[in-house]
Length: 278
Image (cartoon, rainbow, N blue to C red; front, side, top):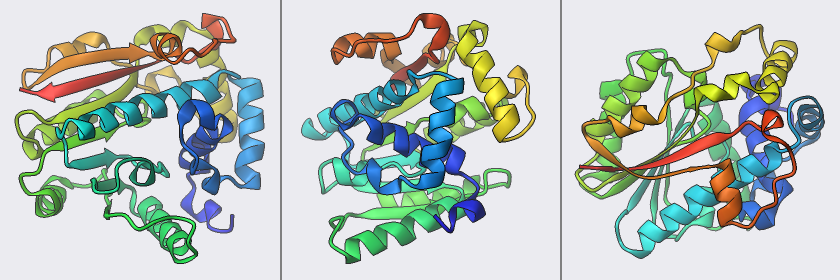
């Protein structure tokens, strides 16, 4: 993929989509395959071998859980807008009910490339038309006022579901606090957040040690303190939101009748939280 080097995100956005494409019956994402490319396939083969072969299924179940949760809320007419922070190359706009309004937020180079590819695939009849609003944001800048203005213009007072998956692991607690404070300013009572994060016990596993070594070889030199974990209490103690559902890879495997293949030491167990604004 010629633009991949310029984007510099194949290790995140491209790979996450490719994982979902590896087991479509589990992820229920029949469109993730569109983002597959030879460079990513090579990267994934090394990742599964050197980090954890279970990663295909952890990503598939994350996608499945959030998609089913959002679908259920749409069916009950509880939400009208999906705001996806760190949207990457997720394909929710084409997997969910067609009338849902989508706001996709990520780095400018990511949303720019994604918009370009989606327009191309729509022109060629590969994808249907959808209402997608792409917003490129540099989160290292003072983004809040400008982003809030754009979101408010698109969604108005419509009910919303904010999704933030695959993001918090790479942020600081100050950045995370700022984001959740921002969520509170753009949502109304009864709106929802879906969040994915890891707990501190992750760092005691062999899988995390393998991940750290892999990132140091493939991406950049880091240590375990560069990756954020969040306890359940972070979600339970939010004064503006009530935690209404909490799952992890193990509970979702049981729910969707998926057979876990590796022992706990070899699994990056992600936790998933649904919050409702009070």
